[in-house]
Length: 435
Image: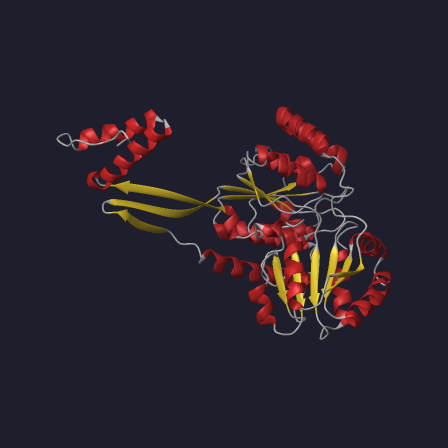
């Protein structure tokens, strides 16, 4: 059966992203040249906040005191889940060594980045969970210094819950600064911060572009676009839950795609009836975001069977992939391209976004074809080493000399020659690479 689009998007997530590259590049150049004063100028312009840029311990304590205790308990619960999952991920990393040939030993070891810069959005929504996801994983990975920057609100500052969470999870410094100026301050080592080795965390298109431009000078978690979600559902799925899950992800933003892929027409049609009703019941701003995403970016695709459904999902390579269908083990074994997978109606993307333990910083815009999301591994450098006895070096040096000369790299060849002549002065070697 050919896929049938019961609803087709009129736009893609990049249709109206705009060209922000020149604007972001100019800001980065200005801040790199002008340092802290330039960063402050942009903070004054965009953040409109006149408080301390680096929070003091007293300010952190005062902000934390404003967070209700029951909310603190929820944050602690989510932090504990993310921390324990990250610690288990760390256990999958191990240093290794192998004797390649007699006398030559090569190895691998994992070394954490020294300094991490974590961006925590605080504009339209205060992303408490982003502080948990980014800071906790950096801490578990063993980064020596972790900085957080988050946009302050005029006359208020950073959301107290974000301040409390960042401190709880292990941030060494908290910077009240948003946007490109916040990213630049972490990357360039302003306001007493060390230069970040890696920048992580979600943000708007200006933050994403700043990270893209800086990539190479610093590491980043990934190139991020608007969040996206896909649901695979069969006739056993509950259309109310399917609709609620689609709407819940569409509220992220006007250009956040959501997709339903199913082999059951009745489920698809009922879900399409319910979604506008669920959107209408949201608070105004949330509803506006969800309505725009649903109207312009959402798709509902009818497939012939579950194999065609799985193939469709792999082609879309969604950031979030939900399965509400029978035989969950089959789907777990079959699906190949996703950022994070949610199996069964008993779990949902929002669980992963907030509290279940897996990370919510995930690949968007089809990037799940080639990468996973943020984890302790993103903060780790997998490096190699080798050592050899003189006998162990002998066959390696001979092969290196001949291969190097075949490539025309005489200088390489001579670094092998000199060792052979020193270690084995009485022996003759064919190092020409010719018969």
